[in-house]
Length: 266
Figure 1: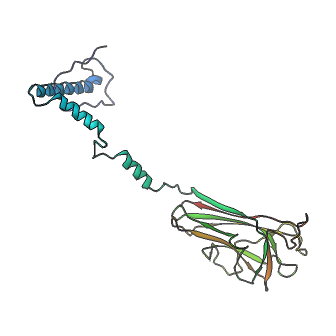
Figure 2 (figure 1 turned 180 degrees about the vertical axis):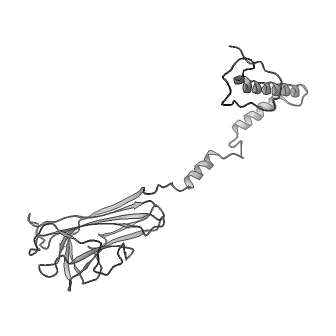
Figure 3 (figure 1 turned 90 degrees about the vertical axis):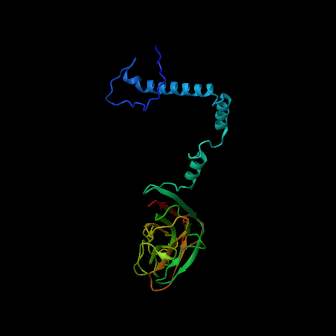
């Protein structure tokens, strides 16, 4: 295998192979043209440096020192972006999101048992304390939220408004997806089996799901709450996670409720 024969010529340009150039090596071959031009430049540069050394204008030890200094420098090319600067830019950039991507899911199971009174045509928070309240801190802007509640319990007493109740979801105290009258609900609890006259062990169950598209601001907390309103003419009791009869006997059912909130990217 032969080597290129360089000449002390500073080539004005280095040829770029074209997609139509034939494959051709050897002396004068188009595939060797750019290599030949670079070899010529290197030979010219070496001859120039040798001449500078001969004339006493360049000391070889100075060249070695300059190279070593360059290699040891923390940032020898200050006009270039450093690795640390690139990493800092990446860390400061918001994470890319995909429309419809799930950003987070929060939820909890609710086991507290209790009874409360629902007034006619008044939204009342379901359960005790913060059981049916869920806060979520959005990870995105203008996100949508899929809000899901499962409630287990029993409504009313026999012939005094049993099951006359509607459920809604509030976001920061305002109903979601329901601007109707107070007796308009997103859903109602359904009987687990068909006995009307016996409210001692006929639990109802609610599966409520709604998509809140009100929007969001990253980092600003949102509170969702399950509320219920009696649609009967008088107040009525509502039991959560148990039947009217609190007995732990096998024929009196007890249950667990749950809330799940999914944030979906805009």
